[in-house]
Structures are given as C-alpha cells and as structure tokens.
Length: 342
Ligand code: NAD
Ligand code: IPM
Ligand code: MN
Image: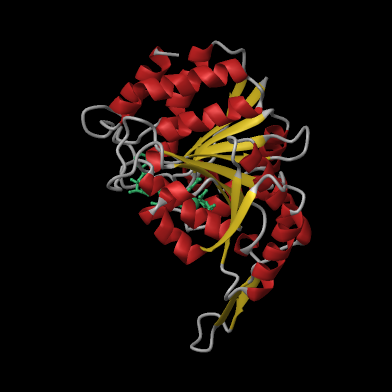
C-alpha cells in the first residue's frame, strides 16, 4: 500500500508526526513517502505543488495531509495551490466530515452528550463558490467590481447528493438525510440542489428526508444537535457548518475529514478539518486526534478494517485524557498515548 504524507505548515507538521507514529504502531506494511510542500518550500523556492509531485501523489492509494497556510504567504497561494488543486484535479467529489463527540470529551453545549452529538456532513467538494470563477474590474479604483460566481453542475450536485443518501444508509437503522442550502435566496443554485435532491430521494424510500436553511441549521446545531443524522450541502456551507460542528464536538482538535475520490485508481485525501493554527504552532499545544481520526477514515476507505478499528478503539480509550492537550499534555504525548494502546 502506497501512501503520500503532506505535513504542510504550522500544526500540520506537529500532528502529522503523531499520525506517522500511530500508523507505524498498527504494524501495517505501508510504503509512506513524505512530501515537503507548504510555506517553507514556497518561500525558499517559489514552488507550490510541482507537477511531478502532483503526479506522484496521484499514484498513491491514499494521501494524508496536515494543513497548509502560512502567515508570510498571501492567503490563497497555498490553500488554492495545494489543497484545492488536489481536490479539483483529482476530482475528489465529496468531503465527508463526521461530527462526533467522543465519550470523555467535553462539549460547550450544556445538556448534550456523545449520544446527541453524532452526525455527519457530506460536503460538495469541487464546485460552488470555490471554483474561482469571477474576477475584478477597475481593480483598486473607487469603481471596483468584484465577481465571485457559484458554479453548480447537475453532475457535481447529483453525485454529491447520491453519496449523501448512501452515507445516510450506511449509518444505522433509521437513515435520514437533510439537504442544507439557502434556497429562499439562492434560487438558481438552490433550485437545482432541491430538484436533484427530490429526484434522488424517490430512489431511497427508506431514507427520511428534510430540508434546512443554512442559517437555521446553525441554530439547531447549537440548540438541538440530536436532530441531525446526515447532512448534504454545498461547498461553502459545508465548510462553515463543519467548523461549527467541530465547535460543538470538542473543538477542531477532534474533527476529521476525507476528500473522497469516487473513481477507482484515484486516491482520496484525508485531513483534519483544522488549518495550520499559527496562533499555537510550534508549542506542542495542537490536538493530534483530528489528524489521527483522518488516518482512521483513510484505513476504513482502504478496507484495512482491522487496523482502522484498532485506531478508533485507541482514540476512544485515550479520549478522556486528550482534553489535557495544550495544558498538562503535549501533542506528542497524546500521540504516544494513542500509539501505545494500538
Ligand atoms: P485554524 O483551523 O488553523 O485555527 C482555528 C482555531 O482553532 C485556532 O484558534 C487554532 O488554535 C485552533 N486549532 C486548530 N487546530 C487545532 C488543533 N489541532 N488543536 C487545538 N486547537 C486547534 O484556522 P485559521 O486560523 O482560520 O487558519 C489558519 C491557516 O490555516 C490559514 O492560512 C488558513 O487558510 C489555513 N487553513 C488550512 C486548512 C487546511 O489545510 N485544510 C484548513 C483551514 C484553514
Ligand atoms: C477546510 C479549509 C479549506 C476550505 C481552505 C483552507 C481552502 O477551510 O478544509 O475546511 O475552505 O475548504
Ligand atoms: Mn474550513
């Protein structure tokens, strides 16, 4: 099995060192290649993601990424040049982001538990406002105009919604799928999403379906998270609500994700939801659990079920202690504890 590892920037480098430890502890035979991409390489060589590196990554069975984004590099250069390039050019159609509170981890929400905070978001991953369509004219003048267009294709929307239904069905006896959008304002894109959702829903009579406007969904995630089973939504809404999801499920240190390829032979890219966290980088304060759970998602996708289960059990065992990361425990101590119980 061939895996590519991109630590990236900031805490990405710290948490991926722990992922490496945990992967080694599983005893799996993995041909692991580390790729030096991110702010340091860009600042010293001007390279973001050379085509040769992109090609090698595309030949892997899976790619594990820490985070990209550097305070000395203009916003977007690394994020679009590395992460979004991988998502777009590998055509990683959906981003699966579990929102799960582990027993022993505290939530900021009074009265909520690991029973009620347990759902998943299927985020469209190659379209919407992320495409980069648009531009500016009369740039820098008082008459400047900036356009940033949301691109929604029937193909992209439908494959995401279908994946949403399949994901709901894969979780429990009473699957439910909620479409989250803003159809009351974004009538063009929202209309397409709602029509495709309704059409595909007819093929899944066993799945309970509902619709939520994204603003109300933000409220419900805080006031009544137990109402969610599986959410399907567009790229930007998915980005925003999954940071909120992390916020209610112990913080970004617990939020994992998989940018999933739907094509055989093309690798998926697994990464924590969080970024490079310059505010805590280099201090051993980052929680490595989100990155380790992203490894769990990778092993699950690669059908390494036994190793995946061991990683999940190890995280569950150590979960109550992980809340001390950044205070009584360091990033590498938490990684050692998890690797130690694999
Ligand atoms: P961020 O996710 O890096 O940090 C947000 C907050 O969460 C910060 O207070 C940070 O300290 C905290 N945090 C993040 N990861 C944590 C962890 N593992 N343990 C404990 N606390 C953690 O978001 P940001 O500050 O908006 O962005 C910083 C940089 O990261 C930017 O350059 C941004 O573009 C980039 N970014 C990259 C990715 C990615 O590579 N997937 C994702 C998000 C942001
Ligand atoms: C994420 C990040 C990325 C996104 C950025 C860094 C491009 O916030 O993975 O959630 O917006 O998708
Ligand atoms: Mn995000």
